[in-house]
Amino acid sequence: KGVAFNTFFVGTFNALPRSDLLLQLTFVLVIAAVGVPHLFLGSRIAGSKPTWQSELDCRVLSYLTEHCVQGKALLSATSYLEMAMAALKEREGAGAYVLENIELSKACFLPEESAATLQVVVDPRDSSFEILSRPYSEGQPWISHVRGTARLYHKNSADPSTELDQSRARC
Image (cartoon, rainbow, N blue to C red; front, side, top):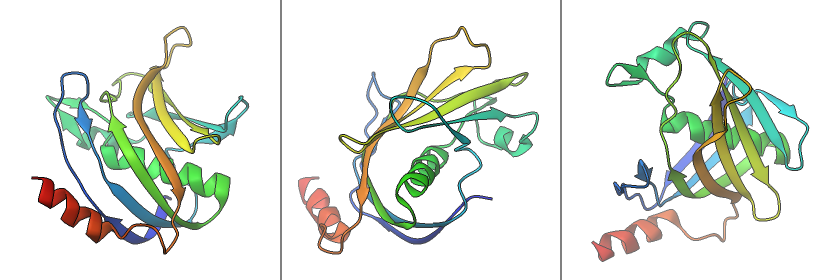
């Protein structure tokens, strides 16, 4: 079971291809998370920062192979956002959250014959999060895929529609 979303607002959204980034998303995303943790979040593990770890295996979760680029399965951008929201819900409880400054730096291609280990790491000092992966073997380095910041949504926060209007004016 995944996180149930009962509110969804998107403010500014710009997709900017860059040589050093797969995709840059600059937007405000407000989602009210209720329900159970996301399957991809996994379990909380010990660490200096709040960290969750999961194993994603296309042989077990065959639907993961349906999101492909050039014949290779990869984790969708929405999966990263759901993982970040699930970590927030686990850490802070149900509520409406804003995800900002999302940077998708590298695609997470999923291996066909083994599992990929994923981690969601939250830094409580600056409310940032990072999603990393590594192949199933322990000796491999961690690869960063997504970074962003998150905060609790307050009604007096900037209206996402205003931010969309401001973004359109810049174009």
